[in-house]
Every structure is written in C-alpha cells, then in structure tokens.
Image 1 (cartoon, helix red, strand yellow):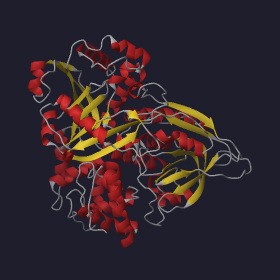
Image 2 (spheres, one colour):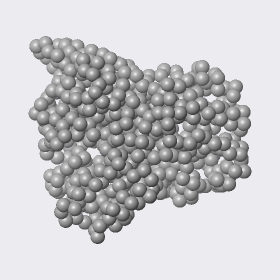
Image 3 (spheres, helix red, strand yellow):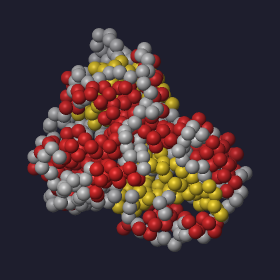
Image 4 (spheres, helix red, strand yellow):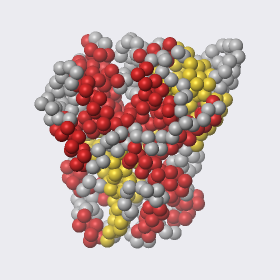
Length: 604
C-alpha cells in the first residue's frame, strides 16, 4: 500500500455484506492480507482451484502501490542491465498475454527512446552490470547499447507475441516524426510495450472473477468459498494461549465501523507490499524483507506536450542515470517516475522537488515546450514493494519477486493470535507479472494444503475482456449496437471503456428503471452510481472519484460533482446528512493531501 486514505475516518455504522460474510463464518483455508493487484490475482487463482479463500484490504482495492504505478505493462528493458533475464522474459510473455486476455484495459503502447550519442556508456555498462552501482558521473546510454538491449528484448517476444520488433531512426527521420524533440538527438529507437489505462478497474475485474469462481450467485455471502472485503485491517493484539489447534487466528477490524472480530486460516498470505514486515510483526512472524522505493508521477493538461508526444510514450534516461517517461493518456499527459528510498514514517506524496525534477526532464527532451504548475491536474505517489537493498542504489534493486515461508507460533504471549500455521510473504512483484506471480504463489499455497492445481489462468479472459472487440471497427460496431434514445454514442463509449464487455450487465441495470445523467458530468448517471454501490464495494465517496472512474486522474472533480455523487450514494449506502458532509470533507482531504488537488464545495 502506498498510503492510508482513511486517517481516523469512520463514515457510518452500516453493516456490509462482505464483512458479514467473514464474521458469520470466521474461518477459511487461506486468508490473503492485502488487496493490491498481486493479492487480488492470487485470490482469483486460488478461487479457481476450489480453495476456500478470503481476502481483506485495509483501504480500498488497488489503493496503494498498485494504483500508483506508471500505468505500464512492460518487459522492463532496463532490467537487462541488472542481469534479470528471467524476469524480462517472463514480463514480455505476460505483457503479450495481458494484451490477449485483458484487451479492454491493456493496449499496445508505441514507445520512443531519444538517443544523444552513439557509443556512450559502453565502458561503464559492464561495471553497472557487475556491481549494480553507478561508477562516477552517470552517462546516458548510447545507440550501440540501446540497440543491443532492444535486440535482446525482441528475442524474448518469440512466443507468438503480437507486437512489432524495434526500429531505429536517424536524426532527420526522427525529427520528421517528432519535430518537438531536442534538435541535438542523433537517433531514436522505437519499440512496442503496453499500457494499462485503468489499473484500478482491472484489479476490480480480477477480484470479481475470483468471487464468481468461488461462489457464483452466492458471492459475498458466508456460503461462498471466495470472500473479499475492503476497509478491513489486520490488528496487532495480544491474545492468551488457547487450546492447541491448526491454523492461525488473527484479529480483524472493520475500518468503517471500528468493529473487531477474529478470523482463522490454515495459511496466511501476506501481500501488503512495502508493509509486509509490519504485517508480519502483527502476526508474531518477525521479518526484515522490505526496502521499498518511492515513485511519484504528475498528470498534465497540456495540449502542446500531448501533441509533441504524437501518441507515443517517450522513454529515456535522464542525465542523472534515472529512467523517466512522458506519455499521453487520453487527453492528458502522464510524467514520471522518481525512484528514491522511501521513508515509511511519512505519507507517500509527490513533493515540490520531484515536480521540479519532472519539469527539468521535460525540458531535456522537449526544450521548446514550457510547463508550469498550473497545468498539473493530479499527482500521485506510491512505495514499490522492493526487497531490502542496503547499499544498492534504488535503480538497481531487483524488480523480481520471491516468496518467504514462515511459521506462526502457538500460544505465545508475544504472538498476535493463537494456534500455529504458515505465513507466506510476497517480497517484490510488479504489475506486468501479476498473473504469473499469482500462479506461482498459489502453487505454493496448494502445496501447503496438499491440493493440486486444476486450471491455469494463462488463457483465461479477465472480466470485461471476454469477447472484447478486436478492432476499432469492432469497437464502433459494439457502440452502435448499444445506443438507445437515452444513450448516445459518447455515453456507450464511456461504458465500454470503463467496464469492457461487462458494460452489457451495467446497461441492463440502467434500463431496468428510470435514469438520468448527473448534472455535473456526462460520464455518470444516477443508476450507474447505484450499480457501483451495490456491486463494487464502495466504502467512501473518494473511491468513486479515484478508483471506480478516472475523474480525479483527469482533473475533473468539482465541488458540484462531490455534492451530487454524495447525494446519490446516500440512498444505497445509508448516509444521512452528517455522513454526506463527512464524506465530502474526507474526499477533499484525500485529494488535497495525497494528490495535490484542491476542490471547494458547498459543505461547511
């Protein structure tokens, strides 16, 4: 998790079906702690194997590091220099898979590297490879090194991948394609990776696949074999010794009501990212695995920079040796990322110094384009779940993952639970490899339980990616087929973008009763908000703004929008006037404190 958006905030005392299902049957074979993409991916995989699995997340799903990513699904060309060939190969294979099984959210991304020299870095690269440290002043990698790296990178795509091989351009052709690039470039190298334009909704799709696999129509009930709840945390506590038993009992807390309850599992899977060690401490399984680094990004409303990118990601090495990126997302431009050691005692937020750094790097690539803080519509930051790395520089810390196995101890006064059981802790992990990682972690869990895998997820479509149109013509045909007198092409397109083919289920709900678009945005309607409240585990108003839609990301949150959404959600979520006011203030605080967005509303 990257930060906690709910500082001492409890909006209501309503009981939630997802929490009730955990309280009513407080035992499962497996309890997963952490609802980022890796925890949720493991939840889905285990549910498909018939395992009785539960998952809890102390905030909202994909709220932390998973929601603070660079929105890239990529093989990690720079990991080649770290010697992480296994990871790069797996990442490229998984990138190609996600383009096939999650085409509603994962799209090909054309990427261009501006190159300022031919042979720079040749002498220092072997030392970086061997020592994982920068020797002396950083040097940008030249065309020779980049060509070698991309050739090797392409070789990892020979599994029937559906992205083209890389291409080099000389200065003249490069500037013809991207005329705003720095005129001092000598070459550009262009290759394809992929982007995920809505990682929060992809995480939600994976979660709902797991719930359906483990319960069908019973999902969210005590009878289901796959139960998940957000806004439920593991609590550190002292319990007296009890009679010997199997598994580990931990205390959980409903973060929306403050209610405490016990839960027991044979295997506990710790996927809390940078918080793995703290979570283990709460269970009496002390560890020192983690050493995360902070990565920040800004989102700009800048038509000039958007046009300069010409639909491509610009991916390059800055003069300090750090890898940075600039790329368009819809009508906005995402710029990132920093890579600095994280102070876990502080909130992960984008600082003024990091913003200055981003502006400097934009000028390094596009010297004629000016940027100012008034064009920033959103900032975000997260802590990467990297392993402890001592003296290794952040950029050279392994992005690969490993799984650590520990035992909880029975009946100890120093243990936050009773009984004994296994804890599997995930150290590391990245967005691109979440499916393969989840399969690996699930196999370890199955071994602990003495069970066998019965299905692979390698070719299994995710959520709204099933039957998603394969071409732009197919997309337009789908949109036309789902238009109606009350739903124009733009509205149908929004629904397809947001839900993939699950939009058909949403449209059926919309048509089952009277509906109207909100006054403050044409991207949401009253009944769609009711659908989200009923089916997508809304804990707070801010969940809708940041993770169920991209309204906050694009800088489209207004005071009117806050008030209108709170008013609509009040009915299905049981918010009275005081709760609505609290939710609005909470949303304002989160947007300001963590995302640099100030929104004024009518609420005092």
